[in-house]
Length: 201
Image (cartoon, rainbow, N blue to C red; front, side):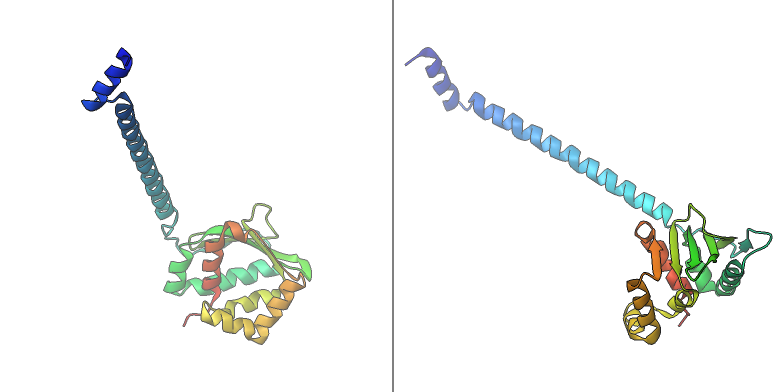
């Protein structure tokens, strides 16, 4: 038996096996790596939650509706009056305070009939035409757009889809007469906007 082999046997017998020590060191390093990873993930999660809480914080607007153009078009005027009426309801205003996006509306039968609404909480600015930087674009027949106000939520929405108005909207979607862009980027904002239009009760 060689001297080297003898030293290994003695070291193993005495609990000083180099390979065992190396394995222990590796396990300690792995535990440290996992610990650092856990701390990192918790930090990221906390940051995301903090950012979400900040972004979701109500803007507490004054419920003001402003027409941006000196000669507002018919759709701008109509949407401004609609918003003024809705924001008189404290519950609707509280819902609008959670809006922070811009929405362009256009009547596909009359492309010049278009307006863009910018929500900074419940403070709304309405301008003529389709703004290029609008977050969401909705193009359809004006009557179909206004019919969405009665869609409701949850089970009410399912029932509404089976109604005459709901079926018209579905047919318009299938026929390309209801065009929507940008909803995927602002799904929560669009849901709140739809709730804003939905009659209370």
